[in-house]
Length: 493
Image (tube, rainbow, N blue to C red; front, top):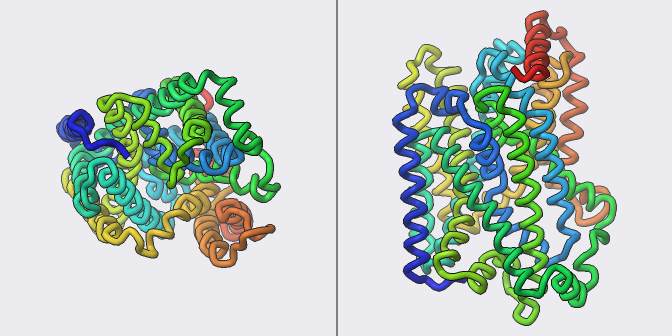
């Protein structure tokens, strides 16, 4: 897409070296497992908010969503609306309660750790099952992201696919290996700013060149009035698209940022930054796609998902284009590094410490976590060697799988005192299982075209309530911790 010129290459090199430098700095500040997987709960509000947004959106925000709007018009904005609502609810209601409850419940540093402590699960079944599902889903996710990074390097610099794959992987693995959560959060903070600026600058410049907002709207409408319509997909379609927002509550790489916020007093500022980032970035992505319809009307793009990259080529100087292309790489990297870290923390905290060596030293656990980064990245790289591998096709379902497996579990565990271990385990297994089942019976039209996340989410909620009434009720200790977390969240102290 972009001329392989020296300014762009220099911009990329400076960016990648900067990310590695942050990893080295974070390495010197990482002394125990809490530091490595949760940053010692000392993230400031800005870093927590922007790193949550960056780790969430990935390249989908810069390539996938604008591409969908460019190809089909405003109707594709329903998914952006659903995700925006999900992100807002996540920040407003889940963030504070999860931060307080994970602290109250044994100072839990991973989600599986929290589930075990929350429900006093001496069988360790919750920890094992949840950690295993995290490893499976995130290995698929990571593999897909590595392929996306390779495509960017390949298309921007003419590298062959294998070389491009390894260049991106080595940088991401290096700073995640060295600095753990702090490195991931700091780099995601920078990457979140890059993504935000790119999504604001491109549509503004494009609209100005098209003659202003009014002229842009007229040109889009002249091509096809349906380009500016939110209708035409039916009730099931709208529910499915908006239903993407339900996935937020079950994404460990996003909600772990809530657990790491420095203080409950920092939460209001983090909420404001996080919500503002999501709303403006989503709006920018939608506008990139819509303005692309008018801007490239005379020479339509063969691949709709290159609309963002096409704008960088025609609107900006190579140095600026290099920065904007770095934003795409940032989107990819910010998600992969978070997924690698959550997966490695599951290995170190939930498998190694929880099952093999309960008395392992902090230094030992940190190095097990670092080894986990290498192991999981290595498996993902093997998967990514063949971009057409059928296993990569399953990645599109990972958001639904994680959302249905953990979303209801997180919400009920935070806000329903009567929930029990039986309900948690049943909800987790039924949610993930129903997503997989629905994928096989899904149809193109009618009720059976409903997005699998919506189905799995509802099924999980039903099973959580049903099985929480089967077996013994919550213990007095569980109820006292629930109230303590509620009070801590309410008082923001």
